Image 1 (cartoon, rainbow, N blue to C red):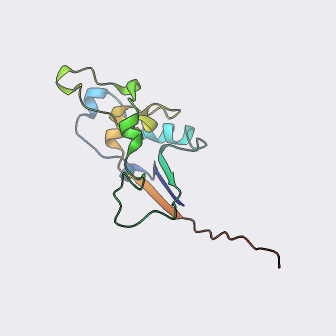
Image 2 (cartoon, one colour; image 1 turned 30 degrees about the vertical axis):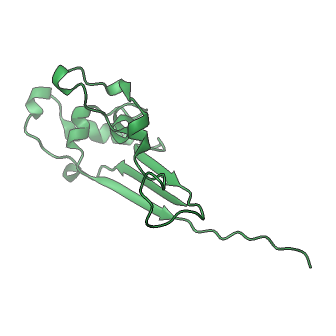
Length: 136
């Protein structure tokens, strides 16, 4: 089984990218993102997570879609909570990770997300071999 987890981590000012339009928002992004990060510390997921159990029929030459590793969350989820209402951009889809970070129990805005500069990505592989033991 493969488990993957990506989350934002706050490690001080170097975790926040300066874009140059901070005055437009009138916000101290470094301070606010630190506060939100501390408040959300107990939330189990502040990013995107994925797990996949491999089958005996899985083969390296199979496509991501055949292996069920394609980004089905982005294709299946409308993520209407962050729908873009600008006519020129309305066909743009908001990916699952952005939806997780900006909507579900995390409190980050899209402006915050654009400044996030420090992500932790963890991938775990769990190998189990289960076999039946037949009585003699």
